[in-house]
Image 1 (tube, rainbow, N blue to C red):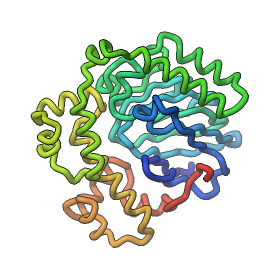
Image 2: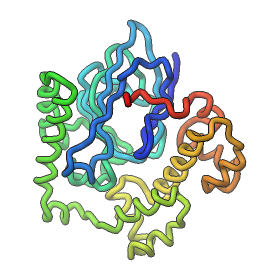
Image 3: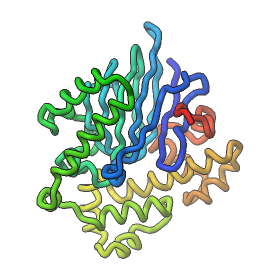
Image 4: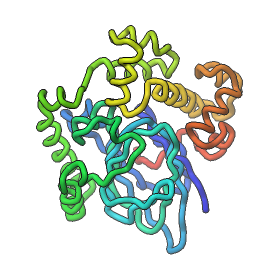
Length: 295
Protein backbone atom coordinates (compact mmCIF):
# COMPACT_ATOMS: atom_id res chain seq x y z
CA UNK A 1 0.00 0.00 0.00
CA UNK A 2 1.44 3.36 -1.01
CA UNK A 3 1.63 6.27 1.42
CA UNK A 4 1.63 9.98 0.78
CA UNK A 5 1.72 13.11 2.90
CA UNK A 6 -0.83 15.88 3.26
CA UNK A 7 -0.54 19.23 5.01
CA UNK A 8 -2.24 22.54 4.35
CA UNK A 9 -0.94 25.65 6.11
CA UNK A 10 -2.53 29.09 6.01
CA UNK A 11 0.15 30.70 3.87
CA UNK A 12 1.05 27.97 1.41
CA UNK A 13 -0.04 25.29 -1.04
CA UNK A 14 -0.97 21.75 -0.18
CA UNK A 15 2.32 20.14 0.73
CA UNK A 16 3.23 16.58 -0.06
CA UNK A 17 0.81 15.01 -2.55
CA UNK A 18 2.45 12.91 -5.25
CA UNK A 19 2.94 14.46 -8.64
CA UNK A 20 0.82 11.74 -10.26
CA UNK A 21 -2.30 12.65 -8.29
CA UNK A 22 -5.04 13.62 -10.75
CA UNK A 23 -5.31 17.33 -11.41
CA UNK A 24 -8.12 19.00 -9.52
CA UNK A 25 -8.25 16.35 -6.79
CA UNK A 26 -8.54 19.16 -4.24
CA UNK A 27 -10.03 22.59 -4.83
CA UNK A 28 -9.93 25.47 -2.39
CA UNK A 29 -12.84 27.88 -1.89
CA UNK A 30 -12.85 31.11 0.07
CA UNK A 31 -15.33 31.52 2.90
CA UNK A 32 -17.69 34.49 2.83
CA UNK A 33 -16.68 37.64 4.70
CA UNK A 34 -18.63 36.86 7.93
CA UNK A 35 -16.96 33.45 8.16
CA UNK A 36 -13.36 34.38 7.39
CA UNK A 37 -12.43 35.15 11.02
CA UNK A 38 -13.68 31.65 11.92
CA UNK A 39 -12.95 29.42 8.90
CA UNK A 40 -9.41 28.96 7.63
CA UNK A 41 -10.04 26.68 4.63
CA UNK A 42 -12.88 25.14 2.68
CA UNK A 43 -11.56 22.28 0.55
CA UNK A 44 -13.53 20.19 -1.93
CA UNK A 45 -11.88 16.87 -2.77
CA UNK A 46 -12.62 14.21 -5.34
CA UNK A 47 -10.57 11.13 -6.19
CA UNK A 48 -11.38 7.62 -7.43
CA UNK A 49 -9.43 4.43 -6.81
CA UNK A 50 -9.56 1.17 -8.72
CA UNK A 51 -11.23 -1.82 -7.08
CA UNK A 52 -8.85 -3.22 -4.48
CA UNK A 53 -6.54 -0.18 -4.62
CA UNK A 54 -5.83 1.72 -1.40
CA UNK A 55 -3.67 4.70 -0.52
CA UNK A 56 -2.65 5.65 3.00
CA UNK A 57 -2.57 9.42 3.41
CA UNK A 58 -0.59 10.72 6.38
CA UNK A 59 -2.28 13.97 7.36
CA UNK A 60 0.25 16.05 9.26
CA UNK A 61 -1.21 17.92 12.24
CA UNK A 62 -2.23 21.56 11.99
CA UNK A 63 -3.88 21.74 15.43
CA UNK A 64 -7.27 22.71 14.01
CA UNK A 65 -10.77 21.38 14.53
CA UNK A 66 -12.65 20.63 11.32
CA UNK A 67 -15.92 19.53 9.79
CA UNK A 68 -16.07 16.88 7.06
CA UNK A 69 -19.00 16.08 4.77
CA UNK A 70 -18.49 12.79 2.89
CA UNK A 71 -20.45 12.48 -0.34
CA UNK A 72 -18.62 9.33 -1.39
CA UNK A 73 -17.16 6.44 0.62
CA UNK A 74 -16.17 7.82 4.03
CA UNK A 75 -12.46 7.06 4.60
CA UNK A 76 -11.32 5.40 7.79
CA UNK A 77 -8.88 7.25 10.04
CA UNK A 78 -6.43 5.57 12.40
CA UNK A 79 -8.42 2.34 12.01
CA UNK A 80 -11.81 3.87 12.94
CA UNK A 81 -14.55 3.77 10.33
CA UNK A 82 -15.45 7.10 8.78
CA UNK A 83 -18.77 8.86 9.27
CA UNK A 84 -20.94 10.59 6.70
CA UNK A 85 -20.69 13.94 8.51
CA UNK A 86 -17.93 14.43 11.06
CA UNK A 87 -16.83 16.95 13.65
CA UNK A 88 -13.13 16.32 14.24
CA UNK A 89 -11.38 17.76 17.26
CA UNK A 90 -7.96 19.39 17.38
CA UNK A 91 -4.96 17.08 17.63
CA UNK A 92 -1.18 17.38 17.67
CA UNK A 93 -0.63 13.97 16.08
CA UNK A 94 -0.60 12.79 12.48
CA UNK A 95 -3.67 10.91 11.28
CA UNK A 96 -3.49 7.97 8.86
CA UNK A 97 -6.43 8.12 6.47
CA UNK A 98 -7.17 5.07 4.31
CA UNK A 99 -8.41 6.14 0.89
CA UNK A 100 -10.28 3.73 -1.36
CA UNK A 101 -13.19 3.48 -3.81
CA UNK A 102 -14.81 6.91 -4.37
CA UNK A 103 -13.53 9.77 -2.26
CA UNK A 104 -15.66 12.91 -2.53
CA UNK A 105 -16.61 15.57 -0.04
CA UNK A 106 -15.89 18.85 1.69
CA UNK A 107 -13.53 19.65 4.54
CA UNK A 108 -13.81 22.82 6.61
CA UNK A 109 -10.85 23.85 8.77
CA UNK A 110 -11.87 26.00 11.74
CA UNK A 111 -9.78 28.74 13.28
CA UNK A 112 -9.11 28.79 17.04
CA UNK A 113 -12.25 29.68 18.96
CA UNK A 114 -14.65 28.83 16.12
CA UNK A 115 -15.68 25.41 17.44
CA UNK A 116 -17.64 26.97 20.30
CA UNK A 117 -19.48 29.35 17.98
CA UNK A 118 -20.23 26.93 15.13
CA UNK A 119 -20.59 23.66 17.01
CA UNK A 120 -21.94 24.86 20.35
CA UNK A 121 -19.28 23.34 22.59
CA UNK A 122 -15.77 24.35 23.65
CA UNK A 123 -12.98 22.97 21.47
CA UNK A 124 -11.50 21.26 24.52
CA UNK A 125 -14.54 18.96 24.75
CA UNK A 126 -14.00 17.84 21.16
CA UNK A 127 -10.21 17.56 21.32
CA UNK A 128 -8.88 14.23 20.02
CA UNK A 129 -12.39 12.98 19.22
CA UNK A 130 -14.48 12.37 16.11
CA UNK A 131 -18.24 12.82 16.49
CA UNK A 132 -21.11 12.48 14.08
CA UNK A 133 -22.04 16.08 13.41
CA UNK A 134 -25.70 15.36 14.11
CA UNK A 135 -24.82 14.87 17.78
CA UNK A 136 -24.04 18.59 17.86
CA UNK A 137 -26.37 19.91 15.16
CA UNK A 138 -29.44 17.81 16.08
CA UNK A 139 -29.84 16.20 12.68
CA UNK A 140 -28.99 19.29 10.63
CA UNK A 141 -25.67 17.83 9.48
CA UNK A 142 -27.25 14.90 7.61
CA UNK A 143 -29.89 17.20 6.14
CA UNK A 144 -27.21 19.55 4.84
CA UNK A 145 -25.31 16.59 3.34
CA UNK A 146 -28.44 15.54 1.45
CA UNK A 147 -28.87 19.03 0.04
CA UNK A 148 -25.20 19.10 -0.99
CA UNK A 149 -25.59 15.78 -2.80
CA UNK A 150 -28.38 17.30 -4.90
CA UNK A 151 -26.47 20.50 -5.68
CA UNK A 152 -25.34 20.88 -9.32
CA UNK A 153 -21.75 21.99 -8.68
CA UNK A 154 -18.97 22.31 -6.12
CA UNK A 155 -19.59 26.05 -5.90
CA UNK A 156 -23.26 25.41 -5.14
CA UNK A 157 -22.32 22.93 -2.41
CA UNK A 158 -19.92 25.43 -0.85
CA UNK A 159 -22.64 28.08 -0.96
CA UNK A 160 -25.04 25.80 0.93
CA UNK A 161 -22.37 25.08 3.52
CA UNK A 162 -21.40 28.73 3.86
CA UNK A 163 -25.02 29.77 4.40
CA UNK A 164 -25.53 27.08 7.05
CA UNK A 165 -22.41 28.16 8.94
CA UNK A 166 -23.41 31.82 8.73
CA UNK A 167 -26.79 30.98 10.28
CA UNK A 168 -25.11 29.16 13.15
CA UNK A 169 -22.72 32.05 13.65
CA UNK A 170 -25.62 34.49 13.82
CA UNK A 171 -27.33 32.31 16.44
CA UNK A 172 -24.23 32.37 18.68
CA UNK A 173 -25.09 35.71 20.28
CA UNK A 174 -23.27 37.40 23.12
CA UNK A 175 -25.11 35.40 25.78
CA UNK A 176 -24.07 32.11 24.13
CA UNK A 177 -20.47 33.31 23.89
CA UNK A 178 -20.47 34.13 27.61
CA UNK A 179 -21.94 30.70 28.43
CA UNK A 180 -19.19 29.01 26.43
CA UNK A 181 -16.51 30.96 28.29
CA UNK A 182 -14.90 32.61 25.28
CA UNK A 183 -12.02 34.89 26.23
CA UNK A 184 -10.12 37.06 23.73
CA UNK A 185 -6.83 36.49 25.56
CA UNK A 186 -6.66 32.83 24.55
CA UNK A 187 -7.11 33.61 20.86
CA UNK A 188 -4.61 36.46 21.04
CA UNK A 189 -2.13 34.06 22.61
CA UNK A 190 -2.67 31.53 19.81
CA UNK A 191 -1.95 34.25 17.25
CA UNK A 192 1.20 35.41 19.07
CA UNK A 193 2.56 31.87 19.30
CA UNK A 194 1.87 31.18 15.62
CA UNK A 195 3.35 34.51 14.54
CA UNK A 196 6.61 33.71 16.35
CA UNK A 197 6.72 30.19 14.84
CA UNK A 198 6.76 28.84 18.39
CA UNK A 199 9.86 30.77 19.46
CA UNK A 200 8.21 33.08 22.00
CA UNK A 201 8.28 31.71 25.58
CA UNK A 202 4.84 30.97 27.00
CA UNK A 203 5.41 33.17 30.06
CA UNK A 204 5.94 36.14 27.71
CA UNK A 205 2.83 35.25 25.74
CA UNK A 206 0.75 35.02 28.92
CA UNK A 207 2.03 38.40 30.11
CA UNK A 208 1.35 39.97 26.71
CA UNK A 209 -2.33 39.00 26.85
CA UNK A 210 -2.72 39.89 30.52
CA UNK A 211 -3.18 36.37 31.88
CA UNK A 212 -1.32 34.14 34.31
CA UNK A 213 0.21 31.02 32.79
CA UNK A 214 -2.18 28.68 34.60
CA UNK A 215 -5.25 30.68 33.54
CA UNK A 216 -3.94 30.82 29.98
CA UNK A 217 -3.62 27.02 29.94
CA UNK A 218 -7.24 26.61 31.06
CA UNK A 219 -8.68 29.07 28.56
CA UNK A 220 -6.42 27.95 25.74
CA UNK A 221 -7.40 24.29 26.01
CA UNK A 222 -11.09 25.17 26.16
CA UNK A 223 -11.02 27.44 23.10
CA UNK A 224 -8.23 25.96 20.94
CA UNK A 225 -8.50 22.32 21.96
CA UNK A 226 -4.80 21.95 22.71
CA UNK A 227 -2.48 23.11 25.46
CA UNK A 228 -0.37 26.23 24.77
CA UNK A 229 2.70 23.99 24.82
CA UNK A 230 1.29 21.65 22.16
CA UNK A 231 0.25 24.65 20.02
CA UNK A 232 3.76 26.06 20.40
CA UNK A 233 5.34 22.77 19.32
CA UNK A 234 3.14 22.67 16.24
CA UNK A 235 3.94 26.30 15.40
CA UNK A 236 7.65 25.53 15.56
CA UNK A 237 7.17 22.43 13.40
CA UNK A 238 5.16 24.40 10.84
CA UNK A 239 7.95 26.97 10.66
CA UNK A 240 10.38 24.16 9.97
CA UNK A 241 8.12 22.68 7.26
CA UNK A 242 7.90 26.08 5.57
CA UNK A 243 11.70 26.27 5.57
CA UNK A 244 11.99 22.79 4.07
CA UNK A 245 9.53 23.73 1.34
CA UNK A 246 12.00 26.42 0.25
CA UNK A 247 15.15 24.31 0.81
CA UNK A 248 15.04 20.99 -1.06
CA UNK A 249 18.63 20.07 -0.02
CA UNK A 250 18.86 21.35 3.57
CA UNK A 251 21.76 21.49 5.96
CA UNK A 252 19.87 19.78 8.78
CA UNK A 253 21.80 21.30 11.67
CA UNK A 254 21.19 24.82 10.33
CA UNK A 255 17.51 24.14 9.70
CA UNK A 256 17.12 22.84 13.26
CA UNK A 257 18.67 25.90 14.89
CA UNK A 258 16.97 28.38 12.55
CA UNK A 259 13.60 26.74 13.31
CA UNK A 260 14.03 27.11 17.06
CA UNK A 261 15.02 23.55 18.02
CA UNK A 262 17.83 22.95 20.45
CA UNK A 263 19.72 20.87 17.92
CA UNK A 264 19.25 18.39 15.08
CA UNK A 265 18.39 15.54 17.46
CA UNK A 266 15.63 17.62 19.05
CA UNK A 267 14.20 18.37 15.60
CA UNK A 268 14.26 14.69 14.62
CA UNK A 269 12.48 13.69 17.82
CA UNK A 270 9.78 16.31 17.25
CA UNK A 271 9.28 15.13 13.68
CA UNK A 272 8.71 11.58 14.88
CA UNK A 273 6.38 12.66 17.69
CA UNK A 274 4.25 15.07 15.67
CA UNK A 275 4.46 13.76 12.10
CA UNK A 276 5.27 10.08 12.59
CA UNK A 277 8.22 10.28 10.19
CA UNK A 278 11.83 11.45 10.36
CA UNK A 279 12.89 14.67 8.64
CA UNK A 280 14.64 12.64 5.93
CA UNK A 281 11.55 10.48 5.39
CA UNK A 282 9.41 13.59 5.17
CA UNK A 283 11.68 15.20 2.59
CA UNK A 284 11.77 11.97 0.60
CA UNK A 285 7.98 11.86 0.34
CA UNK A 286 7.17 15.54 0.08
CA UNK A 287 7.52 17.40 -3.19
CA UNK A 288 8.32 20.99 -2.35
CA UNK A 289 5.86 23.42 -3.88
CA UNK A 290 3.65 20.71 -5.36
CA UNK A 291 -0.07 21.06 -5.00
CA UNK A 292 -3.24 19.27 -5.95
CA UNK A 293 -5.02 22.62 -5.89
CA UNK A 294 -5.35 24.21 -9.34
CA UNK A 295 -3.88 27.67 -9.67
